[in-house]
Length: 335
Ligand SMILES: Nc1ncnc2c1ncn2[C@@H]1O[C@H](COP(=O)(O)OP(=O)(O)OP(=O)(O)O)[C@@H](O)[C@H]1O
Ligand code: SF4
Ligand SMILES: [Mg+2]
Image (cartoon, rainbow, N blue to C red; front, side):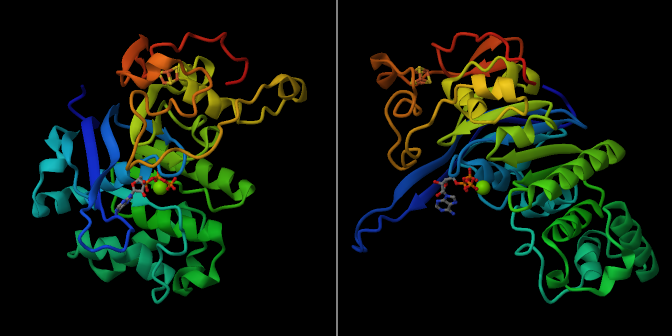
């Protein structure tokens, strides 16, 4: 465990959910959105978090920035537990940890200009800065993320989706954070714009020495930018490994299914690709399957999988998977 960076252990988040029976006396039930997630993120590194909709990715992010309470666990940020901080201490740390969201337009206040939006965190975290310094920093940041400083007085609806996401990135970076959590930052953008935004984030990461948590549905989006990848299913970690190991030697049947779903650019390899189709939707997190939570969709499930929940165990150096039957595969040519 490193003294610097982020070290998360057994993070759990639950929600009280009221049944939609219409009977007000029915008791609410606990939904386990994140169950026992553990990972490390070294300074300057990127952790990719992938999983289907509802697997708990955003909840994990929201617990780290304190917008939902954790039910258990700890998240050491440079040695201090983010989950145990009071409001004032958390506020001071919020400067170091910023978030970028999927819905680029909704996360921008339509009544504020681009310049006001980008400058807003400075007003909160550096109120002593004179206006001329703020203006200079906003201009420099707009240029750095590929926006024209001349557009400083435009409103969000006057920008394209990619430009709105650049405004969000500028706002996140203006107070020089050390960790940026990107929650599906490119999912709502065209494919060509996705690549531009991902490249921008990579460049900014190198320039500012940022740590990134990059959340996505799609493994093909995170595999090129992540040092390590964590695969989530129904709030649980299924596999966690160095990005290359995870993509070339996936050990969990769920990870294999996600990888097989990604088209390969080489036509011959693509023709030989055997996609494992994941049947149906994930079960409700209010009533997860007994034993292995993936068993109802697992193509290689056996009867014993219903009995015991498989523990995460080390299957290779720094490579962890929650399936006792996940034999190593022949390394894939694709990386
Ligand atoms: N405030 C809340 N109250 C009750 N349940 C919630 C709340 N927020 C999230 N959930 C539930 O927690 C689970 C995880 O949700 P979360 O949004 O973290 O998933 P996700 O992986 O980010 O999904 P997506 O890819 O669709 O964004 C889901 O079952 C969701 O319905
Ligand atoms: S424990 Fe069983 S059901 Fe779960 S992933 Fe492994 S083989 Fe599939
Ligand atoms: Mg989400």
